[in-house]
Length: 258
Ligand code: FBP
Image (cartoon, rainbow, N blue to C red; front, side, top):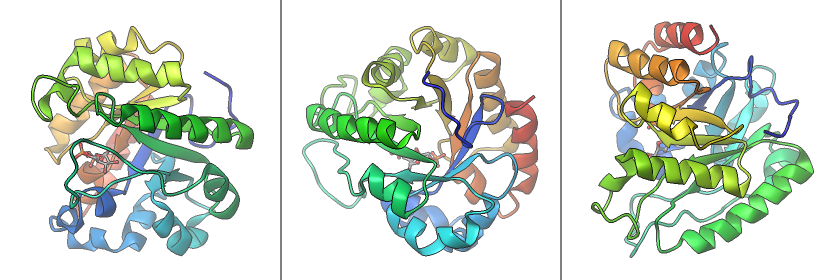
């Protein structure tokens, strides 16, 4: 990995609190804990020492980040797509330049979702190339949300994304295309994570949280990522859908930075 003097890493590991769901999934993700609909509550949560970056889209960064810039490191998601649109395949358009994210919004890192396997993969590669080269220019790390899905993934509309070989391939694309951190769905076991890590070289690997489950189940998955040699977590619903996320973040801090 390129060496960055970046606050999004703590002892080489990281915990990204993802809060792009209002755009990606819509407000139904806030129903479990209605307080999470107010961005200020999630920016407050991101002050926890376990959290090394808060991932949001540009609108939330513009409106809220100024009040939290002393305590929270900002990761701007530079592309995204809603669940409302009907498309023939997965595509996540870019809405923010890296220059704007870093210079105007104060971002310490940028994030980009890559749908490997989509018919629009080549268009997304082009956009990722611009993002990655601009990120090098401004000296910030790039996190790739590596989500294989689309017509090229044969198993079914969406399910191939959980196959370890497919996850490994998508993660490897991150290394090949110049990401600094790759964020993948949990491949289901420590052995699965090890298999992915066999092909990710020096790039950092973090697990994507997924839908909410019990504290025990969730911590167990994170432990297996760290035991396998992974670098942490990018989590949204398992944190902001809990009205008291402090205890879980305390536990995650122990596991990720032990
Ligand atoms: P979660 O921990 O809630 O799964 O969030 C991680 C994340 O990558 C978000 O950044 C993103 O909005 C969402 O998952 C995408 O989920 P999906 O798999 O439904 O596209």
